[in-house]
Image 1: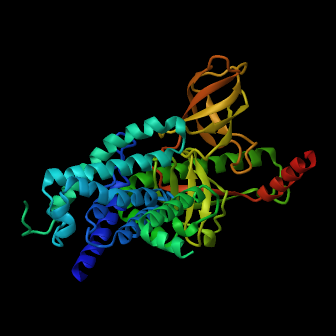
Image 2: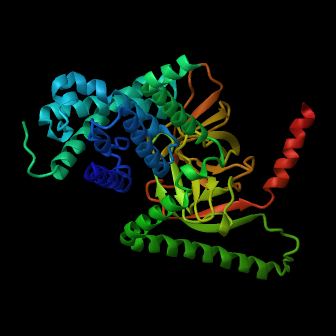
Image 3: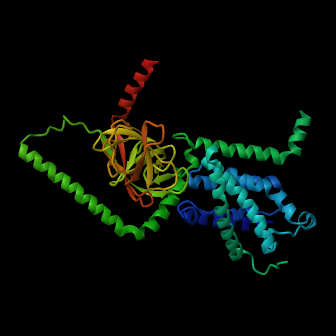
Length: 173
Length: 278
C-alpha cells in the first residue's frame, strides 16, 4: 500500500512535469496538443475507494489548470474520466477478474485491452475539454471533431509512457 | 433528515461527482473575470517561478537573435533621438519640460510562458506589482501589440493575449483614419479581424492598422498590422477586414508594459458622462 502511494506520487510528478514542460508547449499543425498526463489517472489503483479516485482526478486536473491558466477546465474533464472509469472497466474486464482479485492491476492488462480502455476514457476527456473550452454551441461540432485526432495522439503517447515506465518483471497475460 | 443522510451515503459517488464538477466549472467561469483567482493561475508565485526557470533554460539558445532585435531597436531609438535634437537646434526653441507632462510609463519585462494554440490564450510575465505592473495596462513589443495585463501578483503578471476572445481593441486604418474593432476569431495566430469599418471608406490591401486614440488602455498610433484581405458580407454596411498582425506571438521574449498615468482621470470623466445620460 505504502509503495503504491509512493509510485502514484512519482507518476503524478513525472506526468505533470512532461505535460507542462513539453506537451502543452507543442502544437502540431497549430492546434493539436496532446495530454499524455492522463496516463496517471488511467493507472490509479482500482482497489482503492472510488471517492478517492474522484478527488485524485480533481486535484491533478486543478494543478494542471494552475499551470495552464485554464481555471478548472482540466479538473472538470479529469473528474469525468475518474467517474466513468469503473463502468468502462467492468465492461472490458470480466467482473471476477477485477473486483474479486485483489491482485488485479491495470498495468497487467494486455495491450489491446488497455488501449481500448485508455482510448475510450481519453476520447471522453478530450471531447468534454474541447467543448467547455470553446463554450459556444455553434462551434460544438468543430470541437468534437477536433477531439478525435487529438485523442488519438494522446493515446499514442500514453502507450509509449506505459511501455517505458511499466515495472519490469511483471507477467503479461 | 436521517433518510436524506442515508441517501447521501448511498449515493456518495454521484454527490461527490456533482460537487467536484460544479467546483471545477465555477473555477473555469471565474477565470474570465479580471483580477480574480490569482492563486489558481500562473500568477501564483510557485508556478511563476517554475516557468521563470524553464524560460531561462530555454532562452539561452535564443540569446543571439534577442540581441539582434535589441540592437536593432536601440539603433532605431537613437535615430529618433538624434532627429529630435536636430529639430530643436534648427528651430532654436527651448522646450520647457513643464509643458509636456509624461503620460505613459514603459516597463520592460520578459515573457516566461505563453500559448498561441488554445481557444483563449494567455501569457505570463516575470514582473509584477513590486515592479509597478498594474492590471489593465497595455503590453506591446517594438513590432506590435501583444495584449492587456490581467492578474498581477508581487513578482508575476498574466496577460490576456491578442489571441483571446476576450481581447477587443479599437484600431484605425492609417491613411484614412477610420476606426474599427479588432478581435481574434481563433485559428491562425498571425491573423485577426477588424469590423465596423463603413463601406464607403476607401480601403486597400496593405494599408497599415494602428491603435486608435479611443482606447483608454493602449497609447494611440502603436503599429498593429496591415490589411491582408477584406470583404463586404452580403447585406452588410461594414467591411470584414482580415489583419495580418505584426508581432509574432509564437516568438515573444522582451516586451514593454505601458501604463497610462491619466487612465483613471479619463475613465472617471467618461463614467460620469454615461451616468448623466441615465
